[in-house]
Image (tube, rainbow, N blue to C red; front, side, top):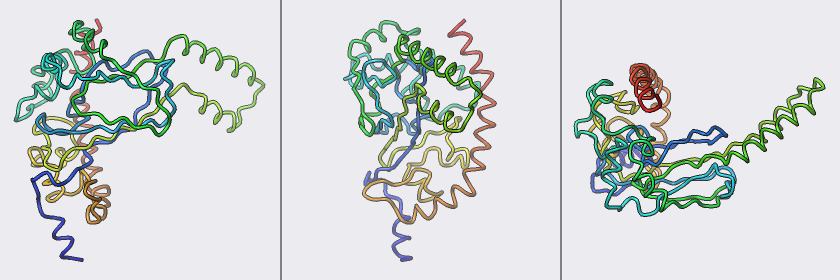
Length: 293
């Protein structure tokens, strides 16, 4: 058993593994705002631009195509001749310096473009091109879309007529129940009737995907800056399963080591990320004021 564990510790940079780089549960409510056409930057996909990847986009709720609230893909955008311009105007990972950014000021002063979500404002002609290739699927709970890391995508806002209809029904239900009945069952029923579409996104990359260097909010790098510049396989071997192996099989050794990572390393890294996020807040507010004066 000890020999087997030692074998799993060996670093292999020949792309023999697939690792889970990030997973996230997302939800679309009835607010009008959505993030515009984009590819995920390092905050959501912790690998440098030369590292490929696949996103598994899993519907947690039924998402009928009529009424909005679903997921739009710009088919073919990952090979479009104008994709480099789109990367530039959204400040994609493709435009990051190899050594990463040095500080919050460096990041917000020198990152290109008008922000990940703002291509409609910063490059209307590219927004139109992306809209022309848009595809929205009629999703049922449990359906999965697999797409390349570099395919432009966006969330679809709910149709406002559907939102108004739903809010009217909520008000009617509230009036009907205004007799003082505030039971737990009523609260549960109201929760179930929320206009909310949930999706679970799992981002996979090869074991030789390189973790970005420099300033950011990546937990493994906040725990140990030396993890920036290492491959996901190297991080797993040297510092623990921050990016668990999923192919050719889950590693029993990594599963055991996850307990230590969660108990000892993750709380420290999360505190450091909270501090980092506070550092970034003034710059985010300033940028938001410029985009939406």
